[in-house]
Image (tube, rainbow, N blue to C red; front, side, top):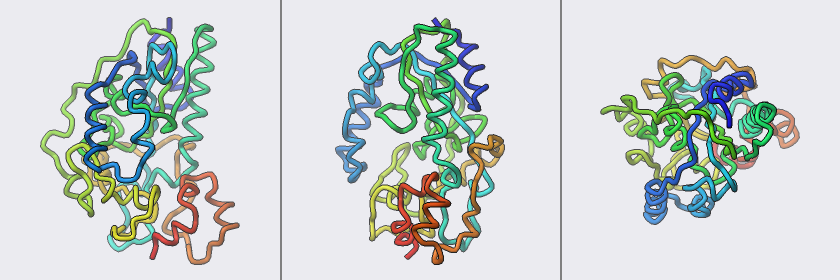
Length: 295
């Protein structure tokens, strides 16, 4: 059995800003909502969301013998998180201005679990960062870290929505667990809904057919206006009151490694792109797609 305080101390020691722990649960209502959302066409051509809905709802189907879920988060807010100049073009979502978080957070989760295994040798499990069908945000709510906002993102009291999540699904029970979040939440605020330039936000879910982030990263949509964004979009976050009062990132691993406003994209070729951006999320889109998004 693991000690809750030990888990949180270990998570903090490897660089996580927040950590919560909850039991494995079956999210039947979330599964039903997801399937209804897909059936309504809101998932568009993102076929990976349509697979493994049973595993997404029940972590014990994903990790055999799972008992607990550790949810960790890192604040990534930087100087571009709250928006660019009014007439700016070639805008990049602020999370993508540094090394790809999938790699960084996965490494941090592994460090955490290695230390926990030293404390509890029978521990086993798996670590995920957007790499498996897991309801990370729902588990984060159950672990007391925050709530799911109207823009469908996790919002935390300390860091707003500028938080990157990772989860460790483990075989051990804990001596105690965090209580689910029960704070005020969004209240009557609808700023994120009103701020979306393509009206993609529909009360705590997204119509991906209209989403700029999806169009610039996942699939092309020539008919969709991108409003100056070439990779991702922060419009629904930069307007959030919780993000206005949250602190800037203080972890060097998640601070920007380049200035998006100083890049002369017309002068960058494949070789230079590989040198400077291969380890960032921009590599997922490829240089060709980024330049197409600029047109």
